[in-house]
Structures are given as C-alpha cells and as structure tokens.
Length: 162
Length: 101
Image 1 (cartoon, helix red, strand yellow):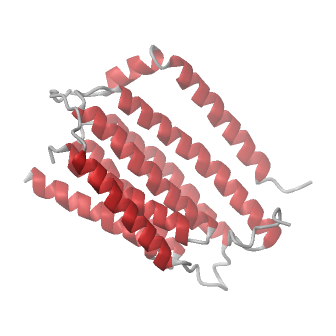
Image 2 (image 1 turned 120 degrees about the vertical axis):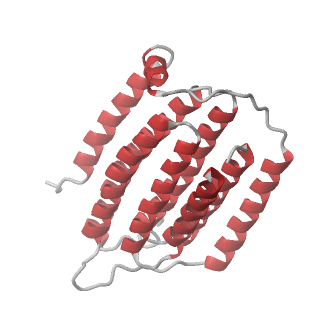
Image 3 (image 1 turned 45 degrees about the horizontal axis):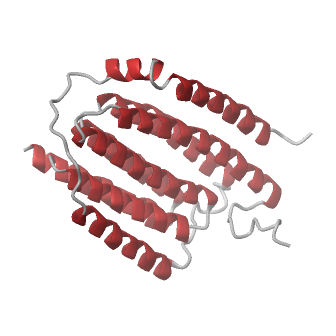
C-alpha cells in the first residue's frame, strides 16, 4: 500500500514538474509548481523528515510561490495581453537535459552508496532545534543576517526611484 | 519506497527538468521557477542521504538552510524582475542586454 502511494506521489511530482517547464501559460505553470512542491513535501514525509516537510509547505508554498504569483501579476498586463510566453531552443535544450538525466541515472545506479540502518524517530524537531543552537549556531545567525539583508535589498530595489 | 535509488532518481528527473526550464524559458519569472525546481532536487538528495545514512540530522539542517536561501533569492530576484519590467517594459531576459555594448 505504501509503495503504491509512493509511486503515485513520485509520478504526480514529475508530471507537474513537466507542466511547470512546458506550459505556455505562466499562471498555469505557477499552479503546477504548487503541486510539485506539495509532492516534494510528501516525499519528505516518506523520508521521515516531518519538520522539513512542514517548512517546505510553509516557506515554499506559503511564501515563495505567493511571491512568484505576485511577480506574474505585476509584470503582465492582465487585461490586454495573455499571460503567456514561449520557449526557445526546445530541441537542443531537451537533448542536453535528456543526456544529463541519462548521465545522472548512470551515476546513481553504478555507485555503491554507503548506507546505514536506522530506526524511525518519533519526531525530528527536538534534535533539529538542539543542533541549530549548538553545532550550527554560527550558520544560523549568519543566515538570519542574510535574510535581513535580502529584505532590505528587495525593499530598496523595488522602491520607486526618487 | 525503501530504496535510496528511487529518491535519487526522482531528484535527478526534477533536476533535469529544472535545467531544461532555465535553458529554454525566456521569461524571467519562468526561469526563476526552473531554479526552484533545481533547489528542490538538491533538497531531496540531502534529506534522502540523511535518511539512508543512519538518520543523521545534518542533512536536514543543510536543507533548511537551502530553503532559507531560496526564499531570500526569490525575494531579491523578483525585485530585480519588477525593476527590469519598470525600466524596459518587458521581462524577456534576452531583451535585458543593456550591459552588452
């Protein structure tokens, strides 16, 4: 049963990712990106990463996707022009990314990955919190500074020129 | 569902699709969507290796940082795209070539 659900989610994620890159309607692409991100969050649940799945839902779908849709709305005249765009050089792009996929698949199947058995933890939130405030305290603070910088930078960039 | 290779394969498909999007799309926001796909593929790899390497949580921390960086990148990139739109009245990234000559 879990296997069927897993393969269903995998197919769902990949098909909606195909829609993201192939659809000519930009807004439809954004909605397909929502389903892709949701599928990735479900994969995290299969990988016992409950906290990361929650963060994926909150930050990606609740934040980044809304930002992207805002961007689409602000940069297209919705009343006059269709929210569409065209792809260029699809042939050569398709060939390159197909060979990239073949190469990656070969690497994945040929490499003897080192694996270790593990038991499923009840929750990962405790351990992630402890790690963030002990071993990874400096990167944690650095990333908060970076977010502040990005916030101020984005505000200044998108302000009306005076 | 209990094999590392399945997750790695899904992530490599997402990565290739993201690269395809970045290469072929000419709309700035659509290129940004391709970048998001690539970042998600990397994140799946981090979490999968963490799960199959003995539930080592360092991978989770790393993917958290990747998510935060993606949020910052999306905010700045959209500010830039909106600026380009205000100045050039297009967001076709091939037209934004003022610095070339």
